[in-house]
Amino acid sequence: MVVVLIGDWFAREMTGTEPVDVRQILENATTEGTATDAIAFDSTGLGHWDSALLVFLSAVRRGAREHSLRFDGGGLPGAASRLLALIAEAAPEAIPPPAGGALINRIGNSFIGISRAVPDILAIIGDTALRGGAAVRGRARMRAADLLTCTYDAGIAALPIVTIVNALVGGILAFVGAVQLRKFGADIYIAALVGIAMTRDMAALMTAIVMSGRTGGAYAAQIAAMTGSEEIDALRAIGIPVYDYLILPKILALTIMMPLLYLYGCAVGIFGGFLVAVSMLNLSPETFIEQTRQSVTGEEILFGLVKSIAFGLLIAIAGCLCGLRAGRAAADVGQATTTAVVTGIVGVIALDAMFAVCAHVLDF
Image: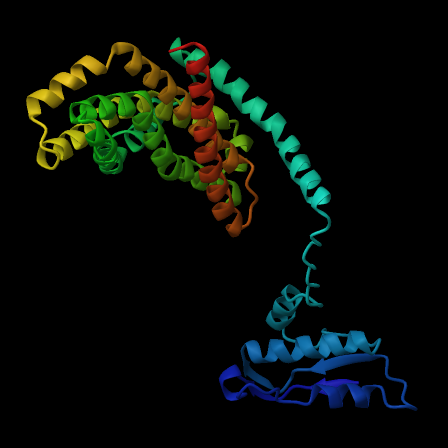
């Protein structure tokens, strides 16, 4: 059976309906008593056309397959044949959502997913130890410009949000401490409370949480986007070491800048407590400064510095690892970012709890 195509075929003129009854064509082609086994086309009288013709041809091809007829596109214009070849012959089948299953199955699947990530975690930790040591000795294969850029992004660019968060935390500590200390007439110890809390725990913890959402998520999003656009595959193809080019500058930059951000956060947090204590709690500036100087020791600051270095290393590794493990779809970028932020925050809090337990055991 030959279908003759005549005139212009424009989608804007079809008003949402097909120009020819496709079902009638197929019924005529399969009428009982005929020897029709294929559908061909004659496009001699075809004028100008757009996607309306392709929609019609796709419907005929789909119907011909359902009626066991051969679709012969030899009579179609060359451009139409090439475009029609790009259209899938059948709509993709919807993938059914995975069944929830029993609780034990979900727990088992989660455990399997975590276990599959263990080799990647160990690999990036090992590479960080080996390549980081080489970088300290000046033998790293990364570019200095990349390290400086990452250092700026993880340091100076993060100062506004670190300032706001730590200043507010210092002020909140002063308010909360005043509520209880005033009951015992111990307002003078507000300065000691703010100073010890900020240097020992809160400055490092709050700065790490902020950097998890700001920098760790950015690392994951950048690397995941490069994975989806096949930029990482291109780097490997031309022989550029991905770890030295992408991962190591980010990890070194955040690990180096976290102690500096911690010290800055301590100063800002204590200053926030100072403002609240002096302006609202009727504590003299001299008393606050003297109490802070006596209560905050070098051991407290050193303990916070060690914690901040560990937090920075954890956040950077989590962000880079989630980006490297992301898929190639656009949705995987958001998923990798979310995973990196959640992993960084939960990991930082868990690591802080471990530090607290160790300090208690060591009576520090």
